[in-house]
Length: 477
Image (cartoon, rainbow, N blue to C red; front, side):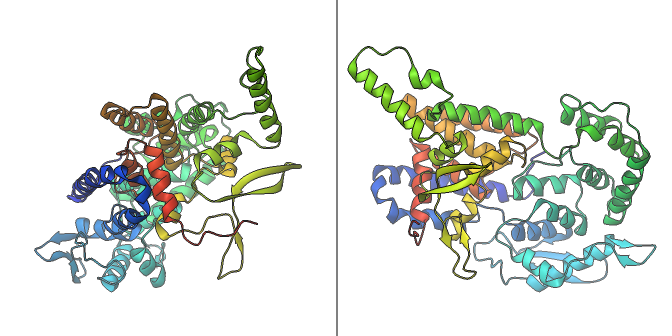
């Protein structure tokens, strides 16, 4: 789980972040007011040094290392149909993701897919990708949806370990989700080469659907520590299709699609973030009122806190916390209806989309911060996570952990090397508990977190880098 590929790519990334970060961050700290002059260099580093793992680059790397042989000039891919492809070295700094070898990679993709995913009964391709879509995937500088990643894993005949690496290193998400029967079936197929095809995957899905219709499970209760239980069962017992289907039917009550462990970790962090941020609410009487005040100054301070809380009467904890965490994003006071109530909040300002003429709550930014801030912990997302309408992701956990850590450092007014190491260890332990890989410098968001951690004020460094990267600051409504 969370392993890196066997080439030297990760080592190169670790070296680059160490060499650049230690030399530059301290230099920036000495004159933080001139960060706007250094911001371009930081942005270029994060964008161009390939300290991210875009899906296009990851797919090329996979094909080169699995189906090719490394040469002095790059890689040679010799497929069984007699086609030989000479490919450039994807690790070189001058490698062009938009142009280099694009037609060769498209052809290689189609050959591999055709070899492993043709239905022998109908002689038709069970999994088909349009040429334009394949081209777009190999050129992509971002990532893809999780569902698309599983289709790609079958199209390129990935085994379970290889698929896990894409899920953790490229998508920066958890590995196979044992609360999703589709992913469990995919894991079984990709763990057994004899059935590692999209044809077999669809067949087993149909087999499970039929078994569900005929089933009448006696036990409808959820199992405690289900993920650990499921992993143990697969390691020791589930080695046939019959056992797989029986396991799926027996565990229908456990299939929520979301990791309960990740949710529990998130709620611990969320409540700690509220406490650390001193979020005021009318229900928090102890914080608002405190002990009986005797002096005039204390009474005035107490009344000021109460007045402030009254002003925030219609503002939820999540809105206040989102504002505290993301102050570097321009905001405006607005009114909206939520659950029949008028909510007054300081949310992201509306920005007009020039092409579509639509309104958007996402701030207009350069390419880098847009990718980093996408799905950040805005108030609506916090509400959805708390109510379990959406699954907790890796980015949610890492950002919230980083935010709380920064507040702790600010309180103790001293940042030691042992604090940095403790954060890395604690964050990695949390991610592993949730079935996710450790912090990965090739992930663009986590790379920025790791860079910010080199500063004596980590969250301020994160904010400054992001704030200076915004362009065309819109007018407030």
